[in-house]
Length: 433
Ligand code: SAM
Ligand code: SF4
Image (cartoon, rainbow, N blue to C red; front, side, top):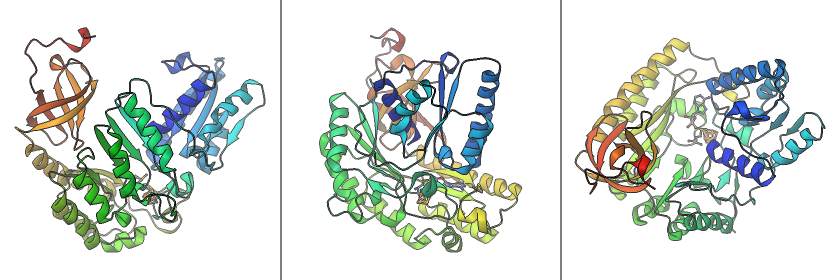
């Protein structure tokens, strides 16, 4: 989502007559698009702001902007004061960026825009040569999970009109985008409460009909993950058989204290229905270790949920107490050592199940969207329809894009394979036109 927001900011700036440079050291204006979900990224932003202020004080002519979720919070505004930030723009006001930059250039002083504007009507052109296109279908969140700052930073849910979404998808298809990712904090709440909009399942079918080879979406919430959505995934060949469904905890007591609106058995029912209906589906989740008051028995319930759901992958976090959330105000944080120890145990469980799941793909062919060269340049990196990270020898790759890959080896995080039909003497990528 932040990657997409950054793309929106860049498009707005370029359309407004500004130009982008490759290195921050060459810029007159540096904008930090921030995340505020956990404490760690906030610390990173603070340290970057400190570095930029040092350069400014040393005489570099530089303006600094803090954008995104952190800008929306008191915490971010305090940092902005401390580090002489010139522009502060929240995630609901990104299209105010050009007027803010222009006003700063005119010498109008510090600029801030923190209101939630209904700028969902802006049509964002696809990034040039992009193989993946991100497409926002809704913004904001109407849930109130007690640990989460998102409802404060991004405001209430608003869904975009289906015509705009389809227009953006068609523009992507015309530009050769190979994969579209529908974005929202809770994509399956799309259109709820507005009879003029289709349901998420209907929208998914409409986007699939545009004909982009792959359609993915994130994030889903278990509360409104209805059977009709599962049916669309099962029946539309270009809707990927990959589902990310955050569980957060396997303990009903913790789920209640988190104000998640489902319980363990309901969550497992959804997982069973998905596995029954969607062939070869890959399921990932989000889990939080060490929520305030989590007992050893609660944590073991999360481990056993992992075993029952047989998650193919998980994103795991230690609970981070965020100022402004109900759990920060009312509940006592557990000792960090206990949270980290539980996270380690979760990671062990994840590695075991991910390795088992990935091994099942050895010897099989997967369709992979190759997009980048690996760090040392000897592998090209891509993602399968089921969202595995897949590496193939760079010498087998003529151009980036969709390829059939036969998987030869699996690790807990990565699949290695060979491009099907690659000739041993294929032109290396660096030499290909
Ligand atoms: N809307 C999605 C949902 O409810 O499943 C998730 C969006 S949230 C920005 C992404 C993930 O960050 C959550 O699923 C949760 O696991 C994690 N998260 C949010 N607040 C957190 C906190 N205070 N500490 C640790 N992890 C947190
Ligand atoms: Fe945060 Fe909960 Fe909303 Fe997800 S559903 S964004 S975790 S408040």
